[in-house]
Length: 494
Image (cartoon, rainbow, N blue to C red; front, side, top):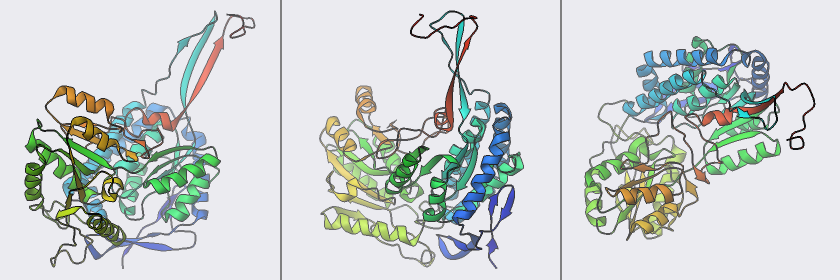
């Protein structure tokens, strides 16, 4: 019998209210059934939200350093269980063990970072315009927060939100992606062991259309953080807007790496290989466009094609495999659809574009690393997020044109330029429309103590990661203390 997993609501592990379940399977071997998880209902979300609201009354009064200490302890437990968690993650979402270990490490880094931020929730104090009066400001928690996370970073992204949110004094109703529920349960187990009290953290599994929608709509949920597609994110924003809720959106990307003629070509080659095909291209920051100066276009493509041909496709739990499976059949069909569109629109598929053959691959959702050349900036494959191992190569004639091409999409998450010219690098940093720009590094590689997020259709102005995430998970309270002993009227008596 497959292992049966449960929700965690109000301090208890429990089934869905109607006993419904869904399966969690290994995308590298669809015959491998990991277990069943609750297919929850809006009733389960209601219980979790009420639990979180009741727990908030006491949790917010626990000193922030004490809340931070619980997160630090969680990081210590994660460190001890790092290899185990990585193996669980690779089994349920497919990326190679080296990458899932990195995913866990990001959670560990975030735990330690946020643990110290419990002693640094700084306010801003300014002089008053009136005598014998003091002006202060403080960060205060929001209340119950809803968290809806994707499958591609099932440890990193939840920790980016849960740890700072807890340190700030909030409580949570957490819905992980249906493709990676096991890793999410492990995170909850770790936080319970670290000392998170009953009701402070609740996990409710299930479909986005049911559980996700119920979280967004619930009157006790005061803030929602969503990571996923731009289409769904816009719906979340609309629903939160009509209810006057805080909302943090982290959505799509169509990230470009620019390579100029003076760049270190080997470094740029390694960068695009990692950026385009790491996590099988299933990152919001993945390099999906490569913008090459015409002077190095042909030679760079020749080297890139030969390197891509050596990438080993297979089960991420087996050493030496570099490109794991697509997350599920639906997403692989979507990638196949985009490859057909690229060919139909006149792009040249120089490698890949198909489902790979092999007895060890036939039960998984694998897809070949794919490169298109002769791509123009307005082609569908150069404009829309594919979320797979598909790279579109575009030719440019100057730095200015490269930046114009990079900016010519609705998204603005990550970007990259390879050049030895400091002036060119600084122009790119200034002019590229993105929340993140790398110089002489690929479009992937964010660090836990830096702001993470994008502009345009990628986000709504908030940032995860670093100190800036606390701007989302706290409210500001201004306090005026008048010790003059008589009425003073601001803007009138000054």
